[in-house]
Structures are given as structure tokens and as C-alpha cells.
Image (cartoon, rainbow, N blue to C red):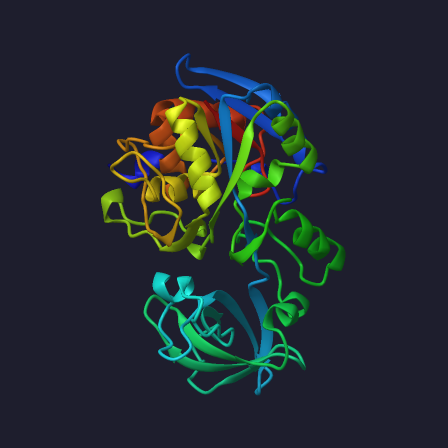
Amino acid sequence: MLSSEFDYNLPEELIAQFPCEKRDESSLMVLDRQGKTIVHKKFFDIVDFLDENDVLVLNNTRVIPARLFGKKSTGANIEIFLLGHCEQETHQPLTNEWIASSQAPRNDKIWEVLIKPSKRVKSGTIVEFSEELKAKILERLPNDKWLVEFIYEGIFNEILAKVGNIPLPPYIERKLTDEAINKLDFERYQTVYAQNPGSVAAPTAGLHFTEEILDKLKQKGVEVCYVTLNVGLGTFRPVKVENILDHQMDREFYEIPEATAEIINKAKLQGKNIVAVGTTTVRTLESAFHKDGKISATAGWSQMFIYPGYKFNVIDKLITNFHLPKSTLLMLVSALAGKDFVFEAYREAIGKKYRFYSYGDCMLIK
């Protein structure tokens, strides 16, 4: 299967640069897989399409302000993009066992990062972001990554909230000097149920939900539960190899609480539908599926690549945004609804001026 088969042309003006004024007033395209029909609604109409036979699963990860802009001692500007913590003693990327251990020494100082520009960066270079925060460059890692040690006094997350910037995708253009817009992004590039910090990109299908919508769904008997998957930088990257089987997914940490596992297992036995909000939720649930047909409470790393031909074991419906050409997200959606039907829907969305990507509109596949 070739990545070129998942390419399409999108007019640049349809790439949403700002969120809809109200979260739940985004356009909603409803795809019926059996009838091969397409219906156009608003997101607040989602309440009409779900009932007591549905379990809604949300990714409650929280986006961290992962973009830092600083200066070297020479006065040169430099950007550091946080990717993830490293172990305190070994400076290796976090392992599942380390994260799960309550005895593990938490060290916010050692991070894997991206650096731009990086050509003249050397080990030992000091970068200053503010009076409260500096970073020492430790070493270059494979895949254009770097290891840095942050220098600060106090609580790192509190300092990061002051100094850092929301890591918007590269197709959303921003001027960092526009404080009003930056404040908007801090609020709107985050779901209303975000809880566990760790993502460098939002689970964007969840951006359309409001507390009111969730309350209405619960009143209808829809059970709501949560998983966590910390969305990584790979969500921005298209598949660059021609044969998609040669693509290597970035690993992302996920966690499924005991309560969520119980709700999903019970629902599957009762024949209810599991409705995943976002491709991150899909990958979390499908990664945790066991051959005995159950989901267990667990924490781990997912590198699951879902493309056409995959047999879904857990989810029955999906709420998702419109995705980039040649992306693994578009391939996942094509695996669920069928590539031809998905591309028919995308053509119709373009014709009707839907808004695309992170701040754009969404679809329900049922």
C-alpha cells in the first residue's frame, strides 16, 4: 500500500487558523458506514446520534507549553521544543517501569528536545529563557533530538506556564507578540476535560466538546470514561516513505484506569458501542486489547500503526477531525470507514468549505 494513495489537494484557505467562536458550533459530518450516506450537522447535534447504547471514551491528556524561546550568550535566538522527560540517573528516555514506579525519582530537569537552529549548538551551550529558567545543552541524540538539562529554582511546571508557549502545529501561523491570540490558544488548544499533563499536541477531536454537551449525553444514558495518551510530535509528521509498511511510528505513553477498563469490558459484553473521541483514543484502546477479548487497566507505550486491512477489536464509532494528506491519522480513519468512502467524504467537505485540521471541523463515523 502506497502513501501516495492517501494524498489529496486541500485549498490553503480551508486550513483553520483559529477555533470556531463556540466549541460546539463546529460543523459535523456524519458518515454511516453501512448505508454509505453522508449527513451535514453542527457538533451540538452529536447528542442526537448517541444514546444509552453508547460508551464515550475521551483522552484526558493536557497539552504542556512545550515551545521555549531563548538566547545563547552570543545573543543568538534559539527555540527549544520539549519532547519528554528522561530518567534521572541514566538520562535514558522514560521506560514504562520507571513511570509506573512510585519510588522513581521525578526529575523535571533532564529532557529530550528539538532545537532550532541547531547547526551551531554545542554541548555545554547555555540558553536563557528568563531570569527563572535556563538550559544547558548536554548532547545530540539520534533523529535530530537533543538532551538538555534545565536550570531553575522552584516548581518546573509553574515556571513553564509563565515562560512556555502552546505548541501549535506548523500549519497554524502565529505572531508570538500578539498576547490576545496567545491567550486564546492557551484556552482553546486544550479540551475542557484535560487533566494529565504530557502532550505536545492536542487530541483535537475533543476540542469540540463542552461541559454542557457532556452533561446532555450523560442525561441520555451515555456512559463517559477516560484514557490518557500523551500525544507526541509524530502527530505532525506525514508518512514520507512510499510503502507505508516501511513507516516507523513514534512511541507514545498511554494509561487506562481500572474504572475505564471495567466500563468498556462490561459494555462489550452487553453489546454496546464503544465511541472513541479521536485517533489517540483509538490507538490507546486497540493497543491495550488482549486476545481474551478484554481491556485491562494498564500503562505502556503505543507504536500502533493502523491502516486499511486492520480489524478493529474495541471501538465501534469514531469522532475525529479532518486530517493531513498522507498522515497516519487519515490511514486510520480509512481503515475504519473504507478509503473510498473517506475520500468521498473529504471531497464533499472541501466542496462545502469545511474547516480542516486541528482547529477545524469534525466527523462522526458510525
